Length: 261
Image (spheres, rainbow, N blue to C red):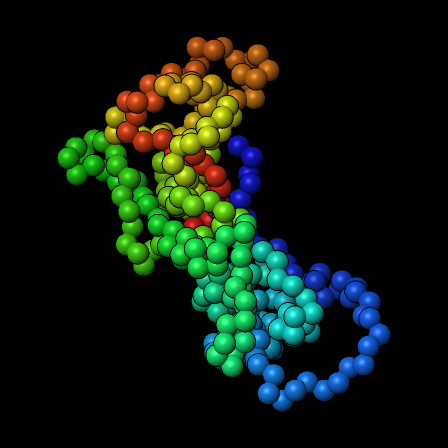
């Protein structure tokens, strides 16, 4: 499975060493005293940070943070994640373009979607876990966690409407650790080599798709996919399932190597 998703954040010191873009020659005057505070600066002050303390928390230089606040540098995914964590807010809240004279100036759009739709999806990504079925303790079910455990949707998944998180715990070894979080969406647009999580007759499994039809799936272990593609593994290793008889099928669209707080 291609590791397409979130990993521990990189050190951001290199941002400070980037050469600034040449500025156009123009007359620079003093800032107006009544100029509205930027939203990033507002969040910093609201959370009681000075530039110095925020620099220590985020490991981003003071001068670079100052440039972010002034708008001369732009946020990227790593910076958004760090600052959102420091301010205890969602990425969408961080990215709102608000002047703090109380007036909304513009709305942030991701993927040409309305900002409020993005915020709604981003802030309400449910988290699930695997539990023993209430009806039969020998069978497994997927249970939703309390809303206090729900997670902010990673920026990489903003465009996906139905994505949710599931705790890997011990159910997806050896491919994922107990502290991993998987990001799933209901099975749609399945294709060969997609990674799927399947609940079948009260048992949960994670597999690669070998072939797919509207009514059936042929599956293999994640570790066997390359050998099968190269003709070095017997086709008897494939598992065939009737899609209509499955309890649930989800496509893995990302994961984190650690359980995101």
